[in-house]
Amino acid sequence: MNIKNALKLEEFAMLILGTLGFIYFGGTFIAFIIFLFAPDIGMIGYLINPLIGAYSYNITHNKGLAILLFILGMILKTDVLIFTGIIIFSHSSLDRVLGYGLKHRNSFNNTHLEQINNKHN
Image (cartoon, rainbow, N blue to C red; front, side, top):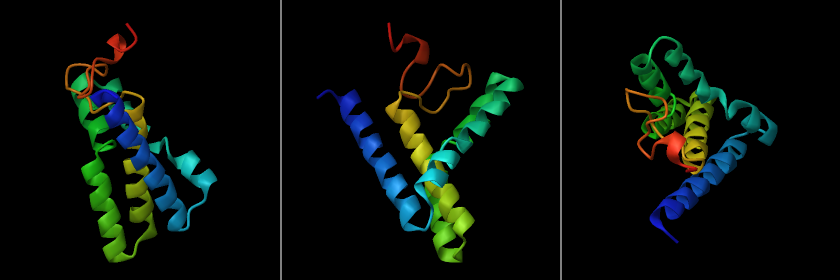
């Protein structure tokens, strides 16, 4: 197995972890699926320009932020923060399984993983 596939497998495991965590904390699988794509709201920044788009996308797809929100939710006993952290974490893992990473400032297609438009060439 090459490194790229090993990393995708690792991200898939994190997606499963997020799914199970969401259910463990009282969410339903249907709710998980519905909210799973909510972090893509960060793409709206691209309507302004690539720089704003990259920042807004990267904030809503940042696993560090996801973990921070989850921990704050646990400390404050706030379900909204717990579930928001799990959703951002899970969505980011799904994106990385599919080859979509955090965005560089110059283009939506230029990610920390690869050039999106070149991945099937």
